[in-house]
Amino acid sequence: ISNPKYSNLSANNAFAFAIKNETAGYGSYKLEDIKIPAYGIYAIRIDAKVIEELNGGNAYIKILEGDQSVNISPSYSIKSAEFSLTSNTKNAVKNDFNTYSFIIKANGICQTTMSLEVAIGDTSTSVSGEIAVDDIKFESLTSSEYENISNSTFNKTVDLTISTASPT
Image 1 (cartoon, rainbow, N blue to C red):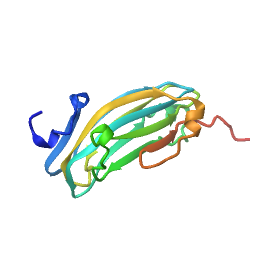
Image 2 (cartoon, rainbow, N blue to C red):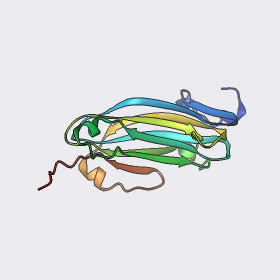
Image 3 (cartoon, one colour):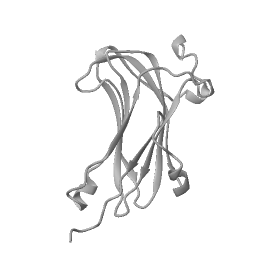
Image 4 (cartoon, rainbow, N blue to C red):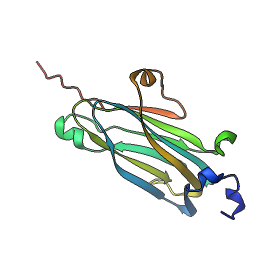
């Protein structure tokens, strides 16, 4: 990449992609139908950074559960989580990319799906600026790893378990 603003992208970031709004607007990329097998604990990890200052709002990384669980339990509320990327945190080890992790405890009844969206602005907020995304990973975790993770700037936990208790 010949543009100097990308000069801190190393060879291992060669396949990073960017979302850029030169004028204020809403731009997004959505990956749908990420399968979340039943009975497990998983992490969806994504590396992202702000390349050009965001004006007028924020950039987001969001996950949203599909509606399969509602078909099993009509009172179930679909789960989601999001991170806001408001500034470029210096992280020299990863070329200023930060790793954002969604830690997911799957339900014990059936496989479900999640969608992952990376966006600048949203449907009600127009934003200009540019972000880059690299390395989207899906990993299995152990119960002990799950117990040792708490919500933070870079971790969000999402519990997809469905209560099977019935009213008495």
